[in-house]
Length: 100
Image 1 (cartoon, rainbow, N blue to C red):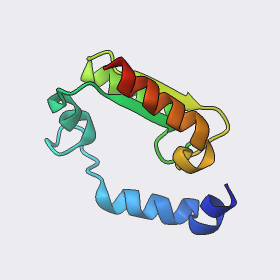
Image 2 (image 1 turned 30 degrees about the vertical axis):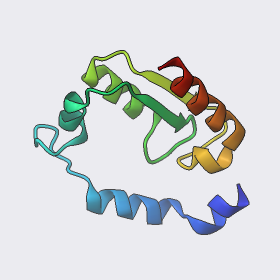
Image 3 (image 1 turned 90 degrees about the vertical axis):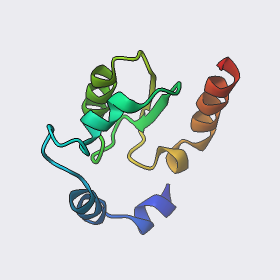
Image 4 (image 1 turned 90 degrees about the horizontal axis):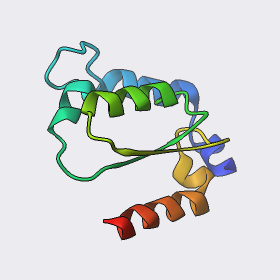
């Protein structure tokens, strides 16, 4: 977790997101529009404390997709949940892959 804190700042990550995201929800390149095109089984993993892609935003994405995707939010983790909760993250990925 120290690695994540040393390597990233909230301001830095938000700057990247702001420069790379489409903000108009009706734009065909907006995430809420693109998600409708996903046809593969999908697992969404996130940190419950994520300040970049909040749990509320993840749930909105799943609802917009309307495909019953699996969502796992790791308590105590932020945007880099793969580094913050690696064992739990790996367990969920393996569960998802073995269920398919």
